[in-house]
Image (cartoon, rainbow, N blue to C red; front, side, top):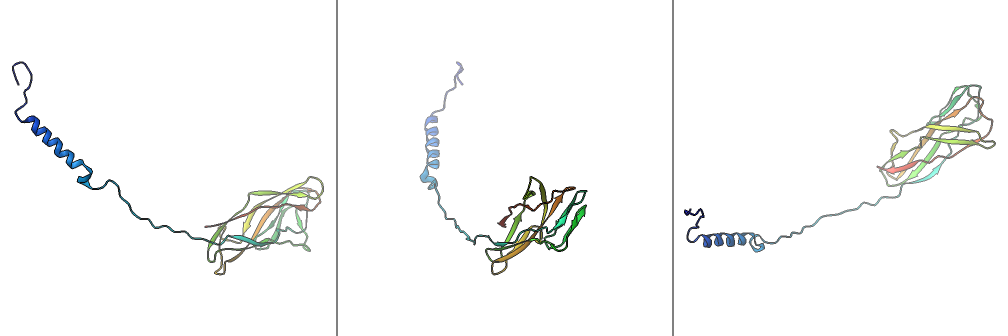
Length: 182
């Protein structure tokens, strides 16, 4: 450092700095590292399956019964057993039956069934209703597997809530279920 307080650079300093800078620019140039882009290949695939479709259904039929003065239920199991609770009396001449669903799709493929929480059945006269809920199936955990021929079937049951002194009528309604491949 000089007595005036400024620092003097040694002789050749600028040449050394330029040499270092120009050498580092060679290291950072594209030709020093090769290309900045790369390419590759990726395999892709697709599996097509047959549409899962319902080929036939039979109605969920609770049969004939008589309401009592107290509320009750009529339960139709997915396997075909009908029982009553509360004030409901079953008429044995019309025992009803569970709904039977037949379906087709991709062989040996598993599927899942989604059922509604509840639906209303409406009287053919007046405006009386009954609630159908507690849906069950013959499947384990609402899942099934199609056969090696792509065929499947299962039953659906449910619970019908009958109020005390329910209006005498024929009650009907519909419900929607959904099938999905796993």
